[in-house]
Length: 500
Ligand code: BES
Ligand code: MN
Ligand code: ZN
Image: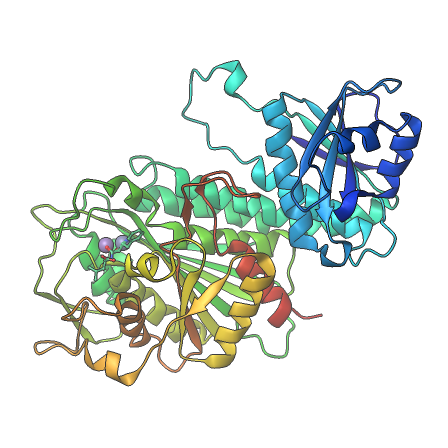
């Protein structure tokens, strides 16, 4: 789907999308069109329940006296509530709506509405981004899809007075959208195609954006003492990997310490010897969504030339049962030197992250470290699929992330950490055990375990088990991989770490 911006001009073909505010107040382009067509818009609204509320769409087919085929009235709701998220949602809904209608071409009026808190260029750029995000498809393995099941919309053009300004706002957003598509591709790939080595290979794409990509194989990981990560991968025929991505966008900054993002990359989680039930096990192909979000975030930052130093680090393993798999009650030595009693081989994400978190804080001394992981089913019980869980050892860092999440529509809800929970993972046989005795506070226990491997670093853990994959279409995301975290972290960097 092609996205373009051009000066206001009545389209000659396809659908013409004009906007309407709550209580059927026509925006200027809609008013002009209504006049030109002898009141066709006013009459159509009068014949329906269309009120101009947010998200309402109404088609007027083949209006007389104009060259294009369809008017689409798009409700914006209350003008004073109009914001970037709303523009993105509208762009996304339009794509869905126009594809359903079989449309190939669309022109969207994005002219300035008097009194709007959102500038026309911002409106156009964000609507364009929303359109692209919703147009995402993962169809590379469909070899005989029927023509009429494929999307029809080929081009969407936004009419805006200051074309250059709209393109300028759109530039960085479009890089973020590309990174989101990349992340969704990684999460969607089946585990026979995407496994630790092949996922590490895909990270090399970031080199073209100036990111330094280091891949650690099992020999190097052994040398580093990554016994926790390697223990998870040892039952798999596919060797484990760790990938470090370094983006230096602020080489002259006074404080050169990077901000670091760490991702869980379990390319398939059977549970290992503590094997999962077969129903729903296919979901565990996306147990690498944390790593994909980290890779996408680094790509977004590098592609848009963010003025920040950032590290992306991912631990890549496949958790399989087998003759060489680790057993419940095995004791492994982590890179930190701490020993871990593995009482449940299905609590594997924390074992992988223990080594990667330790490595990152030890080598890079980051200003802040944020990990993303599909860590616990418990976070779905607590928060469902709307909020991701956040746990942190630093209130200011948690607040920054929560604020970025609010702004980008990827909300976070804080869960506690604390001394008493920490006692629950003391092991009688080793320094720490990877599960607690009871079933309570499962997400917190996971976070509490990670906290033992972050040293003194300001750190936050995002449990994205409930938000990495969606079983329903969303305005800016078709069902499937969401790339949750990429927008949030990109915004978190913009608002807190980018040199102005
Ligand atoms: N990858 C799972 C968590 C998960 C569950 C992600 C559902 C997405 C959807 C994780 O490795 C896991 O198995 N966690 C266990 C931990 C338990 C053994 C303490 C869980 O949540 O049951
Ligand atoms: Mn597991
Ligand atoms: Zn897992």
